[in-house]
Length: 300
Ligand SMILES: C[S@@+](CC[C@H](N)C(=O)[O-])C[C@H]1O[C@@H](n2cnc3c(N)ncnc32)[C@H](O)[C@@H]1O
Image (cartoon, rainbow, N blue to C red; front, top):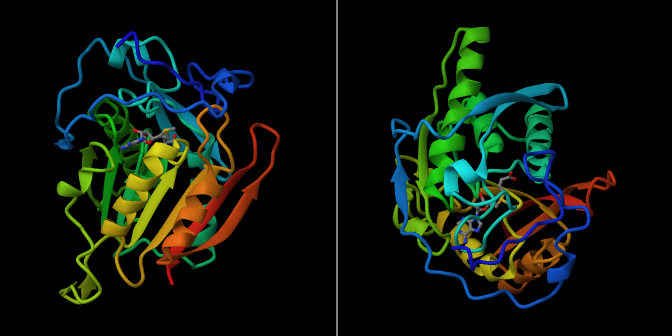
């Protein structure tokens, strides 16, 4: 494990090891090293035990008018790794809160406020969830089902599930309701996790009980940093997105220094494929990182 190169992606939100302002440039445009075999896909149950050596501290995140809760855990406690943004193929960055997930929640809140995005009755999938704040937001807005996916089962167990529980208990304390969404958690590589996901798009003609198969809303933040992962991620989206009305909200940087991915390559791959159309929903140039964007994808 010690031989795996670690990357600092420029840059994440002010979380544990974030120190990206000058890091990562040494890897600029260098070819990605071979990745180890990915872990097999697994469903993680919310009742699964977390080792008592993993300390979870809750803190508030202000997102516009909204406040959500997030945990903080140490990469060393969970993976035995020194603090690093990610170790390709081993740990893919899910323990940090990245700026894109905040951008995404802000946009979702705006879309809900404008009546463009009703969550009620919808099946939501958050890909590369890490902390899972966009998925948690969907639960708070009473989506029918919210399924969370991360590369690492440990991230789901030690962070996503406790985060969801913290936010749902806060909500039930303040509004005397508890979460009504069906929530499930899946770990694994994007090339294989569809084997476990309950809602796969079986084609335009597959309508069950009046509802198209697949997920109505797919959310993802900061998932397209690596060019090598983009193809399998896009393949997974096409397998899972309900046709013809499913939508994807994607928050990402225009360019990821050090690892070479970004919105341009991902969107040009989509354009070449010709199945989905993309619309820019928001561009964020607040100077805290390179340009960030939120895109909406839907069937043509
Ligand atoms: C940079 S983190 C972003 C986490 C979170 N969305 C956020 O914005 O805070 C990238 C996420 O994508 C997931 N991921 C990266 N490559 C993956 C792959 N090949 N298969 C499955 N998940 C992957 C990681 O587990 C991680 O949660």
